[in-house]
Length: 221
Ligand SMILES: *Cc1c(COP(=O)(O)O)cnc(C)c1O
Image (cartoon, rainbow, N blue to C red; front, side, top):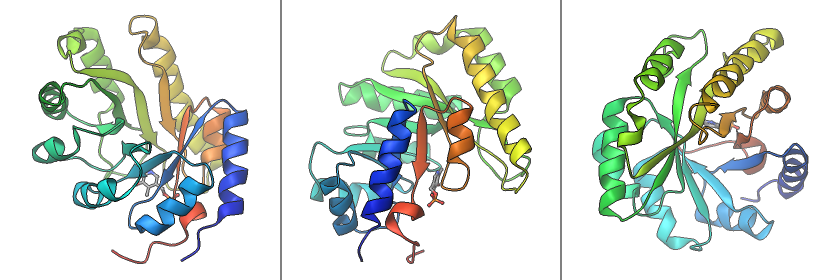
């Protein structure tokens, strides 16, 4: 199936003009679709499922940058640690500990984002803002030598209320700005998807994650 190349190019331009990075979310899309995006100049791809990612990754050019954006189980970290460029969805110290261990084995340092629960929905994964504050106050992130905590990731509520979405993104930026003075590596804010990326960019997003607008609807489940 053909991807939406014109939309991809327009998004690349709009997002880079704002100084942010486009993560093309290719979950449940074929390697052919990813190759089409690569041919259109897209280098960064986001995937949600470990097994799918480890099947696709060897079939595509080594220069592709893979970002993990799905819920990650500790026992699966070892499969992606050798090549993953960034993990956006760290939601526990247990997971961070395992990423550090597997990164050491792979002789790498893996950039990670702490996933912060912003939305009103109950079901989303992530640390609460209080938990993040507690974690950063304790100051034991330095003990993880093979991970760099590079910022925060957050998803806004699924709502038409633009102000609510904006406030949720804004809270994450305030949190990042506050803690960046103590942790200069907190540079990234992964926020914004197809429906809300413009608000996210206005609120300081550095990475937006867009899938269906580029690749079309996901048919496989
Ligand atoms: C699937 C997914 C996206 C992309 O969603 P689209 O609606 O296809 O743009 C972004 N972020 C996360 C965490 C996702 O799981």
